[in-house]
Length: 326
Image 1 (cartoon, rainbow, N blue to C red):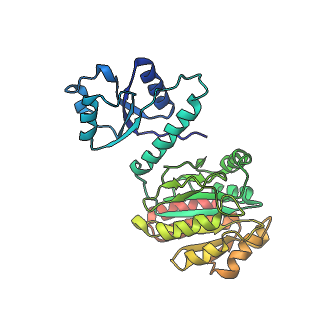
Image 2: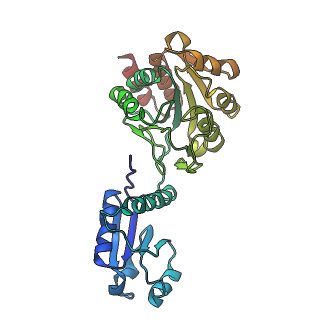
Image 3: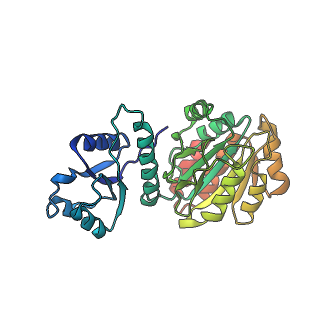
């Protein structure tokens, strides 16, 4: 799934009109905004280009010796992405790879631009066998206005991800989306991590990739993500981290839960008797102090009470408890 990059504002300079049109079309597909687009030979260096303030410039030209361009480049205070090659024709064999390289560059740029809206709490929902049913039920029992965000880590294959997302999203009161690099934690969002590429949270609350696979027998790796999140974001911007271990056959996540607990992270589990496979919740309980264990519905009720207990007003608490009781 390609990533949409809304809000990213760019300026374009290209060799010719056809190259410029291909670049503009590509940015439109990425949901970026083009603030300026001009052919190199037609630029008025004392004109509109001076008034444009994009997040970055894309410069695709083969005239590296152009003195006016060189002088302009030196003066830029924003990122300039240079490509000293022609833009391939859309139907050429080279175009898909060329397009993918630009998408990767823009993702990296967007990681540093997007600002997260920190939720009051961020919960990692970790699961394996039996997880989609349990997590789907849990999310279906929550009110729609909780000040909480969710990262869903489900052991799966790449081919199985769309179906798993569909199963969980069908029941969830929140949108469930496959996560991409550059996306930010936010209230009312459920990001589902993919199996093919490792995504971790940085200290700004953004998902970032090192372009490496998950270094684990399980993909995505619960241990790797929880270790990273507990180290980097617990308590950042008054956002508290929590982990819920749902049904699963493996022991993935147990060691990270112990590590996270030592840093003040709440650890909850699905009760063994309500799990299709109780081994993962039991493994976490053996080495970490589990604050609460219950069925998916009970976990939802507990989360609502937990958030209400730290709310600043009584009204959200009453609305929250009324929703889960109905």
